[in-house]
Amino acid sequence: MERRAFLSLMGAAGLSTVTLGPSLVWATARNPYQRLLILVELKGGNDGLNTLVPYADPSYVALRPRIALRRDEVLQLSEQAGFHPALQSLMPLWQQGELALIQGVGYPQPNLSHFRSIEIWDTASGSDEYLADGWLARSFSRQPTPADYVADGVVLGSQELGPLFGGDRAIVLGNPEQFLRQARLAVPGGATPRANPALAHVLKVEDDVSLAARQLAAGPGRVLATEFPRDGFGNTVRNACQVLALGKGVAVLRLTLGGFDTHQNQPGTQANLLRQLGDGLAALKTGLQELALWDKTLILTYAEFGRRPKENQSNGTDHGTANVHFALGGRVKGGFYGDAPRLDQLDGNGNLAAPVDFRSVYATALERWWGVDAQAVLGGRFAPLPLLRV
Image (cartoon, rainbow, N blue to C red):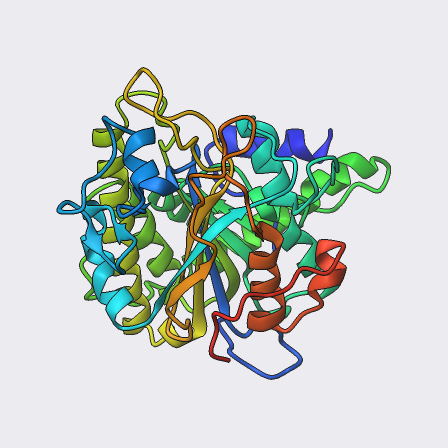
């Protein structure tokens, strides 16, 4: 049985766990993962132009006569740009200098297929490369997490491993309540059959999953006073903080908020999603502060692509290229990074240029946050962004 098929079977069986392996020990130089990384996937491709709105650019309204946000609607961050009003919850983070906005993020020769483009982002590959493992899995392979960590990473809000794919120490926590109930019943398997290596591997993974499950389920953890939003992403954020409150040790959390593929009726859909995102990230900060982890955490958003600058005939936007992404944390130097969108210089397909390669964002996490060899993981040199106080 192939590993991918086995992991799919595990998810179908309801255990909601995948692959394996490390306590929030913010330790010595021998542990490069002494700081936590939280990735937030905006699945479907969020519309960056209606997230960080270039309200002062006359081309913006010309390209979007129906769905553009007007000057008096946005939350002004500068004389040129402002937040979608649904992101009100992020204003304190911006004002406190703990939120960085990275503009123009993408990659050369962009692919506008959801499946292929997110594969490029997850593997940190070029558009003409096909890599077998995620960029985080490669980092952990080269520089393993401490043996006492319960996992390299925990995935919440999705059944997909994304950048953790190809590793052996990740957990997909699709339904935390069900997971914890089943984890308390999980027991290791028996002797490993030597005559059947494939079966032996399956049983080994089963045992590893059981061990991680029992470690996560051991003890009640800490009861948090933080109030989390009562919506889908709010629940994902609450579950993430509960995982951290157990104190069992993890290097990465990957959270997902889906629904951003807004080909039609975008204004209402995106407003709801951005409200969930803003409220959830604000609650995540509060939860991390309660756990004394805010200054030890870097939060990065990502998506497979942005949206086209010109609105379509269905009151929405189609697949595009460059996008804006967020970096948050107690050690983040807030402000604008990258280049503001040049709506008067679209390419032949009506899309934006992407001056910031997304692998520079990854290099920032690998090199500046963790101190690992970003070039070896990413397969080339990508300049980190100067958005961290470390």
